[in-house]
Image (cartoon, rainbow, N blue to C red):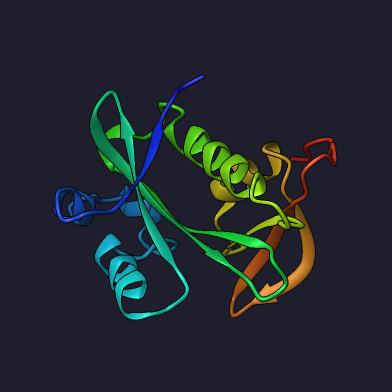
Length: 153
């Protein structure tokens, strides 16, 4: 399995994060990292993370805490040049496990557009379960620590 490191976005790495791009086919599903960085900087909800592999920033993600204590994963981006290497799976797994380890966290949630079949397949394979909840135009899925789920396709 690919091992990634998650680290806060800082004055040293934010430009590299902002320069990350996704595959053209994903542009309808993922915002530019600069947009996510603005959400993190000017809002009071999201916290940005750079994703490193072998010392290089190869991805970006962010997390938040909801009123009910659940933690959210958002803004998952793997640079187009580094896709199909297991980085997305490693990033989501690492962040999911890190967030779930916080005492009082009932579950870890994320959302995605229904047409984003690649994201859906990844999240379901990692044990996230679609709850029937919808946020704007996105499906919500949650992962609950200690609950084993048989992945669906």
